[in-house]
Length: 151
Length: 154
Image 1 (spheres, helix red, strand yellow):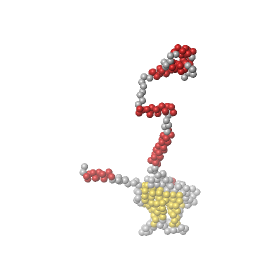
Image 2: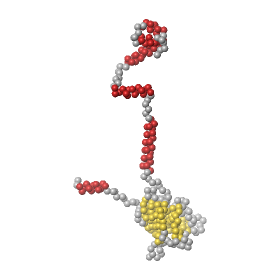
Image 3: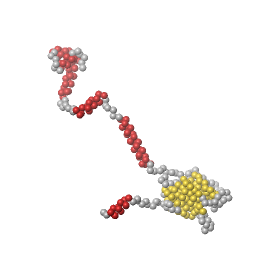
Image 4: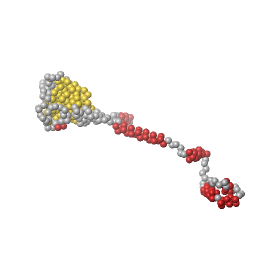
């Protein structure tokens, strides 16, 4: 908008509400601001006139229409992007856990040591010693008391 | 279709499939006479290279082959063979465990010179044997020991 004190009189003349056409035209001849302002008003009027199809907003559409206006004024509505991120990470973790259970759940890890559950002997004066050698071989050693002889 | 035919069909569908007989276990046994003969280096009879590691910690210097035998042993059935004139080796594979080990009952019979006498169990043991590993049994003899190295695989 122009800062010229003639602005309102120029607007009234532009809207054909004024009878002082000669005075306004005389002023505009010496005022580049008002001349430029009138030019902008003409462009706006021409732009509005170029819209040939006008959309009718029904009563049911009005709330959405107003929401759109409010969104344009106040910015887009919050869409909780963090919630979706959290849900995606949770779903991925669940998928990995299920996969791990399917792959490893049914299999017992391989055991590397031979385990002796029980042992006994019917030989008199004999004892059995169980030990695991340094190379991991489980051993049962049948010995007899001193002086004894298995063979 | 008749009622009988329907009954047979339903029964066939519901019947538990018969499991095939479980495969036998391969049992490999090396029986050696271990003695001290004053050697500077350990001596092993030919064919005993595979048990060097199993007897590495023993202080004997001479290992002579008594019996080397590999046999297919069915599950839950005792398989036995004579090691020498005094000992008999018996093994009963009991189950194949989920962790890969084979559970088995091992028995060493001491045979009496008098064949009329009942053999005595010199050792009875139940073990979970790791495949590709070994179970070692040591029995004192007049000179040295009789060492039995047992390995199993399915």
